[in-house]
Image (cartoon, rainbow, N blue to C red; front, side):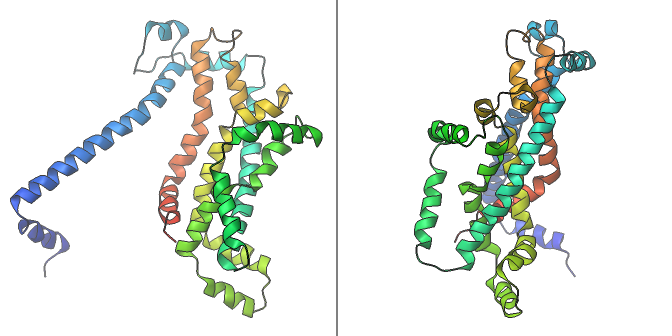
Length: 295
């Protein structure tokens, strides 16, 4: 009995030589292109890490691809600064995870409402959500700032967390995922058994969309973690600064003499994101592929 490998070899033999050469050439070009793009993406991160291990003198001498031995010194310099670096790190964690948790729950709930029910004005509401995705957030900054001040929420984390409930992009993503993977039969069966709507959502719907939740969680955490303009506009107390705000202080005249420490501080901002992506990369790819299914 022929094995799968033998069958594939026989099938390749039946393909004309010119077509096989063309196929091999196309594959080679694709591999080269992907390799170049990988280097383009990885090289800046590697250079940043290398600079984090070099002294200011070495950095001023030019670019290097080989790490040096000043990482411990740069770390000590960074920790000796008179700003709460570690506190800012945990502040960013609190804001990122809190806002992402709210966004995931309520965005998925909104998307579920568009898929599981039929009601008047449904298409109009969804069109409004799609329109909101296209409006730059900068256009609403002044009005949002005034609202926060009028509500007495200035210099708090509330305006950085609660607005995540309204995330048009997440609603769109979850709706696409529901359209491709969700079956209404389990919902109807649960209703017949007497389960209420929130119990169905919490115990049946959420477990069935874990890949989408994991994928969107990464996007939400990355977006919130990298948010600089929002905290800069709303936070004034140094102890409440987020990590990107603290790293920005490294670029001021007071701290910019320590280039190695500055590079280490910037590198620290991306380490959590790299770790999260490395752990959940397969989930991200699968979730995006499924969530991009057509209606």
